[in-house]
Structure formats: C-alpha cells, structure tokens
Image (cartoon, rainbow, N blue to C red; front, side, top):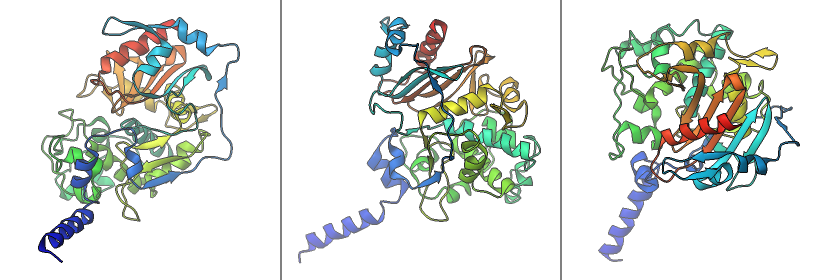
Length: 375
C-alpha cells in the first residue's frame, strides 16, 4: 500500500470525522437556502385532532382576481399578481381576508400540503410564547431580569439584562457577524452543532437597552428563559399553547443543532409548517392574542409590543411596523419570508420562498401595499 494512498485515506477519514463540524458544513452548504432544515434533526410539533379551515370563496375567481391586480416594480415594469408570484422563486403565496382565502398559489409544489420554512419569523413566535407564559403566570412581565430564571447568567455579567432586551435585540451581548468567516457566531449559530457551548461564550459589551443589535443569540437566550420558566421544551410549549389551540391543519418541525437529549432548538429560525398554519398565527397576532373565542395570550400583549418605543424605530419584539404606524405590521425572514397584517382590513398577505436576485425589502413592502390597496 503506497504512502500516497495512506495519506489520501487519512485525509478522507479526517474530513468525514469533521462533517458534523459547523465550519465544514458552512463551507459545504455555502449560503442559507430554503431547504437547509433538511440537514438538521428536527423536534416534531404534533397537529391537533381537529383543524380549523379557512374558507375558500367559490364566488371569487382567483385567476380573474390575479389578473385584476397590477403591481409596479422598482424597475418600472408593471405586472399582474400571477406574474409577480411566479417571478421570484416563490413557494407559497396567500391572501386571506375575513378568514376567507382570496388567493392561494404554490408555484413549485402545486399543493398546500408541503411545509415551508420560516427563518426569522420564528423570532416572533418565540416572543408570542412569552405572552403565553405571562398569561399563565410563569413569567410576571418582560421587565424581569434574565437572572431571575437563569441565575448562572448573573455570574456571566448580565445582572442588568431583562427579558424585553432579548425580545427587542438590545441585550448588548457580544456576537460576531461576519458571513465570510466560517468561525463567526453568525455562521456557527446557523450551521454549528453545539449552540450550548456557543451561548456560554456570551459576554456583555454594551449596557442593555441602549443599542439595537439584531442577533440570533438573543432569541436562543429568550427560549432558555422560557424553558426554565415553564419547565417544558419550547417545542412542547408551542404544541400545547399555540399549535393545538389554534387548530392547525398539519404538524410542524423545528430544527435542532444536534440529535439526542442535548439537542438545542434553533429558535431564531427554522420552524417548518404549512403556509395556512402560519396564516393562523397571523390571525392570532391581528386579533391581539385572541383566537376565535379564546384569549391565547395575555390581553393587550401584541398591541403593547407594537405600540412601545425602543432603540429601533420600527422593530418590535419579532415584528416590524411601517413608519411608526402600528396599524400595519409584519414579521419577516431571510430570503423573502413575509406575513403582512392589515388589521383595519382584516387582511393578511403571506409570501414564503426565496429571492435569488438582490434581496430588496422595499420592493416587497411596496408590492404588498399595492395589493392591499387593490383588494
């Protein structure tokens, strides 16, 4: 057996022994995409026995509706809704008003039964679970200190850190964001296999509440507070307090950093579910935590989040408002995942997919507003 063969075999052995390493995974997968969750183990969230179904209006011709809505793009081109939906690598697009589906299209799968991935929309879901915990009395209010639930974090220098700082991304903790450095926190939180070890390296850099710094570590620590407060894994709490009460149509899955009992949920992203079920979350948010006849969240919780002022002009604990106008708000995720809510019209516009051209939030915002004005 030649030396060259032995060297090659050794290199292959080293490579395959490192395939669980986040650096190797990031170099192999290169950039986030809509199907990344398939590379991670999943925590399953079970569907209820009975599902609430949005009504499909037979008197509304979706094809005629799509042809009747014109959207002016930044390029100056004007296209109808059907062309718009099919032009930007969309996986799911829904328009729902008064619990009726006015328009629904799944360009790639042609079915509503295929799950879509949420990316940072999950951050809004975690802050929603905080509202559940407040209603149940597990958490008193968002001005409580993190160390009241996680005493070990006081020893790490976070004695002034409050729950609301994590929700608003004003924690002041360290977090390296270079997307070109495979060892950075930004890359390793998404691709790595040991979030617990990563979280142990957090240190305070800025006084909490002073500066807005959007980062995944805030949501991971918030979910740690939730688990300590409720005594349940976040995925189980989501199932019992949101998924089943909202009568979701299907099950869901949430990505873990590793298999087994030591696995940590990537709660800052990566919840997979049916688009129609994400729409039910939008209905809950639009109705300020009320689902049909049940008050799921603490009364006034969502309205309070949207109305408060903070270090960011538009960001509100997982949600964004338009120009300080909380009457229109939305939650969004990387690559072009959106749930836009227009409470005064009882209207939602959902779009999940990718956008392989330059990511342009303004284009989506302008387009959704144009659609809402023409419905």
